[in-house]
Image (tube, rainbow, N blue to C red; front, side, top):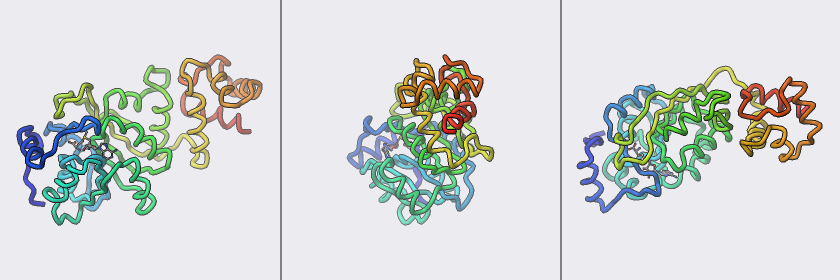
Length: 284
Ligand code: SAM
């Protein structure tokens, strides 16, 4: 790779974009990471090794992508912005065999990439805020489980993913994203680390696949559906949510009793394991 570009200089970015007749689009959550220290820390959390298969969502003009490719990774990058795609293909990664661009909406394209070539070793991305949580949830629901994922996300989303049982941030997304992964907030990023600066603060999360799992693989899809039901209305009791989901009150009360759970308990007061045990009793 011979592309030499200072991704931390807003002037250089503006010159490149202006020269190509491009502009930043809010609709696509375009906030480039311009903080060198943050880019270095993300790379260190990513633990890239030569030959690793890496997916990146939203490479933009390549701030993270160039680092991943220079570290020897085989990168597949999903980018929706046709203008950025042109820069990546025609300027940044000309004849680069370790870079493949998948143009279009990642939510439409990732699944066929997964079906054809399997899960990557790593997903590393400064995710566009509008699709971040949906993308992560879809990977887990469809059982595409790379050993490691490192994401820059809205701080609140990271906090929900790390939320402990009983805390305000704990909910179905905390459980879903930690079914297979140990989640860790690596560091915070102020909005000034990005250009243009977003309205919210961000954080980097590291998701490391766990050996020990909470739910048996055969039960995972059923368990995810169960989570949707028990968390469907946050203020309602678990009993009422299950009744609204088609379970008879008598059956639920019996299952709660068998699990020594208070009939007025809410889902957010129960751990992933307790909810699993309740689901198993209900299915007996
Ligand atoms: N990786 C670059 C960086 O860190 O500076 C850019 C990150 S920016 C937050 C998000 C990127 O995702 C943008 O390049 C945007 O065009 C792209 N993007 C937004 N929605 C997308 C989608 N649905 N599918 C693929 N890329 C998308």
